[in-house]
Length: 123
Image (tube, rainbow, N blue to C red):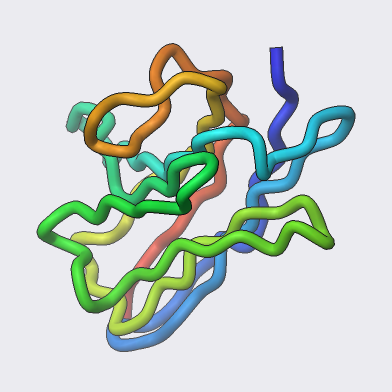
């Protein structure tokens, strides 16, 4: 079981930016496929962006393409989700997930989950 800690959420105005961080202890995240997922009130959890182990291929949901970027900082053992041009519909709890296994989509299969961080986009 991988222990993941997300941070960086908060309240931001529409059009603003945030950077979410996903950090781990005791494991090297570079060996893992990492995904960012989100869940808004009353909605199912959805995949936002993923980065696969080995080749760093990425996946982005259509709703965030061109606005969000996923990246790794191996020196800090951290994966980031850079979120720009935020919209009210991006409001959700954002979760980081990690697995040694991945789907064809480059997202983690049967992952360990972090506790989540709240992102609220509102004027």
